[in-house]
Amino acid sequence: MISYYFNLFGVVMFAMSGAFAALDKNLYKDLFGISFTAFATAVGGGTLRDIILGAHPIAWVADNNYLVAITAGIILMVILRKQLHKIPRILLVFDSIGIAIYTIIGMEKALDLDVAPLAAVVMGLFTAVMGGVIRDTLINEIPQIFRKEIYATACIAGALVYLVLKYTTLPDIWSALISIVTIIGIRLAAVKFRWSLPKLEM
Image 1: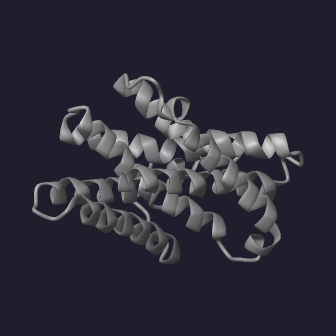
Image 2: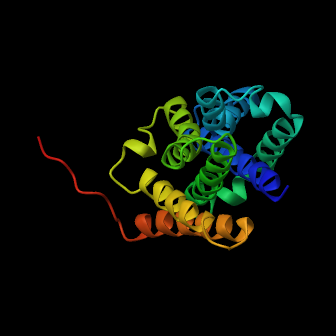
């Protein structure tokens, strides 16, 4: 039940990041364009995960609360857009929280379906980053996953932490929280201190 509400919170965060990105780029002035970007950002990763895992019906199709959460995220962003726009790197915050929660939720769902542990890490990664890839593509930006700064690596690190903690006596909620904080911490620190993986030269 706790993971379910974590999931809905992640949906709200990603919906807000999608709506904010559309507003920030001034690509979509109308509410439909903003809503479409928010929707695609919020459910893109989870939809891909469910298709790969053969999990039917797809999560947001089976549960109206996903659409309610997306709508709430859009409404919050539209109402608070001027105030939030004044906060430096606010999109980074929404995105970091979103990828952290989605990584663990994606892993949990994969593990519940008896997916191999390392494959579950990949499912967590897909769940986390694909919504952002869709968002950035829609607003004509290079997706974060293809930039030099640490992004997907933070998700993988947090997923591996969660995998290790699953084999301890620590309650699942604490394993999830520690892993989520790990991903958010690595992501924010990577941006602040400009960490990046080694660049390959041709």
